[in-house]
Image 1 (tube, rainbow, N blue to C red):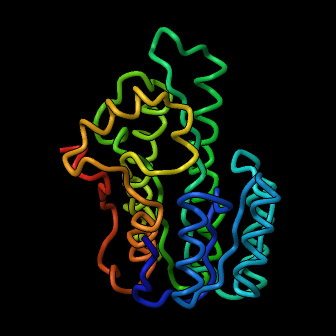
Image 2: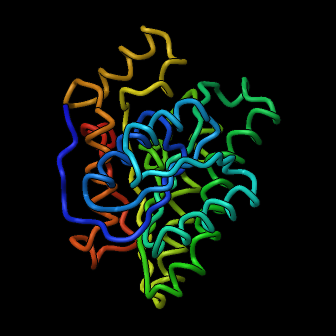
Length: 247
């Protein structure tokens, strides 16, 4: 499946975790839609390869989402290329461990990347967006942020937090014309789910009414729509893109 070009997206957008998977699909579609995209990731080889593929409209920067200085550098790079109008907080990790299997170090690591990384990303872009007259932030949560996902305690906790932070930020930032929405993918065919055994993956798909994995391009279509002017009256929304898994 290939990504379709949706409504145009003006200005510059940052995509965290943008070197592969859903983030790379989002970056490709943003470029097709007319935006300049800053791809941030710790995967430098994949990120630079994507920059070479997409040309001058794409710039890669090393971004560890848990490091404030990395976010500052990404925002400065974005501002140097034009008006920063969009952010997709896409970076995340998945751990398949139950409550009793999850040690404190694992829990804290997942929360730092999935939750604190999202917090730092929003905090970093707001001053520039407000100065530009507004913008749009898309926080990538999960169906685990809509319903409990057994066997993924830390991941579920972090994705519920992303959902809540999105709503709080939407209420705070509306006066600056900054919109904040969360999207909630179900099982998407990316490297993140490679940690699951075939048996676990099959069991998960039996819970999806559409009986298939989602594709990164399908998530990208939704994320880019939320950055575009077509969604100008949407903020604080939580949108599942999960084949019906959260019903």
